[in-house]
Length: 328
Image (cartoon, rainbow, N blue to C red; front, side, top):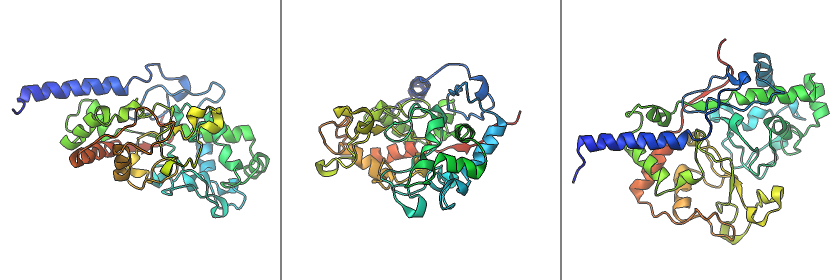
C-alpha cells in the first residue's frame, strides 16, 4: 500500500532529525579564538581544536600556503606537498600509492587533507598525534622529499618551528562542506535525490557504514581492520600494529573521512580499490576474512539497486572545498 503524502512528510522529518543527531554528535563547544576566522562551511563542526602555542593568523596561513607549493623543500627541488596533495584532486594525487622524489614509490596512498584540522591522529597508522608534527615528516622521508629539517629550514630561511607552524596553520584552513547531504540536513528536502536518500538510509542501516563513518567529518578517527591488508589470507601491511604492538591491531588502519570521496579515487590505504563500485562490492561480500577482522564486517547482501543508491549518497558528500581565512 503506498504511503500517503502526510506519512511521507513525517518520515522525511524523522529522517532529518535522526541524521542531525548522527552527524552533529561530535562537539558542541564554542569556537576557539584562533579558529573564528576560518571559513567553516555548512555541515562542519563550528569548533576546531587549535593549539594554544600555534594560533591561526593570516601571516602564518599565507606563508604556509607558499611553503605547501614550494619545491625547494625536496632534495631535487621537484617535489612539494602539493605533489601528493593536489588541490585539483581534492588534495590527493590519484595514485594507488604516493610517489615522491625521483619517482620513489611508498607503500600507502596519499589521503586527502580536507578537514584534517579536526583530526585526532595522523597517517594511516596514527603514529603522529599533532598536525605540527605531521607536516614535517614527509620532508624527512627518503621516499618523499628526502631532506633534513636543518637543510629545509636553511633553504626557505625560517626555523623548523616556523616551518611546522605555518604549514599546519594552512592545512587547518583546507575545509570541505556545504555538500548536498549537508543542505539536506539543514532542511533542504530537494538537496538529495530519492536514490541518494535511500542510500542515506542504507548508510545508517543495512550497510552499517555509520558504524565507523560518523559525525560531521564521517570518521570516528579510530582504527579498524577491514581486511584490505589481508588479501588471500596474507598480511601485507601490519598497519596500526607497528605503533601499538597490540596483536588485535594487525592490519588495522585509520577510518578516512568520506568528504569528497567521489573525487579521491583510488581507495583504501593501498589504493587497491579503483572505484566506489569496487568499494561497495568489497564490503558487500564481507571483506577479506582474517583473524582480526572488525566484528562489524559481514556480508551485506545488497541488491544492485541498493548498491547504486549507496553510491549516490556517497557522491552527495562532495561539496565546496575552501582554503584560507575569511575576510575580517
